[in-house]
Image 1 (cartoon, rainbow, N blue to C red):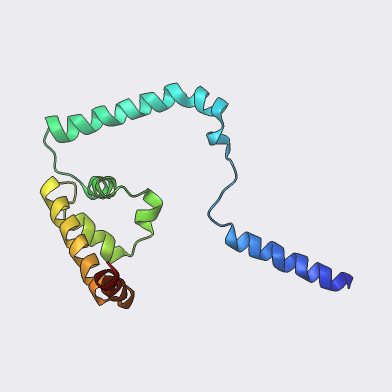
Image 2: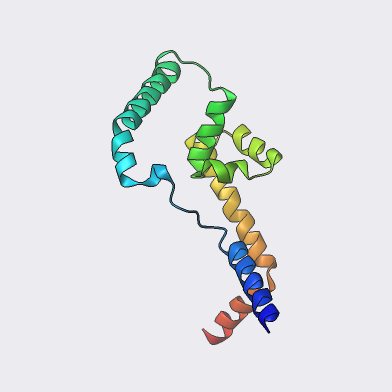
Length: 138
């Protein structure tokens, strides 16, 4: 009976570890006091980055490098570094090559995404059932 209880406890603990993968413990940098102490440095680094970006790409007119193109693409899509890095390489490269930070390119991309979604829905049996039900029951 004790062995059975131990096994149940181990199974439960392992299931909790697997299911709870989306959360992380608070790190030192997330503490309010540490963030307050680091605030002046964070602001300085951010201002330096903005000034450097403005100087290189707006004033001097440099072309975007690969790193900058990736950053602009991620920002245009609203993706975190982790989520963007989790994509397959060909998909990431396709997105970067499309220059989605340009408004017209992003608009065309969003239109394509919506059309693909409509096509998927049109092929979906559940969607067809719902449309029939709405047509019949109104």
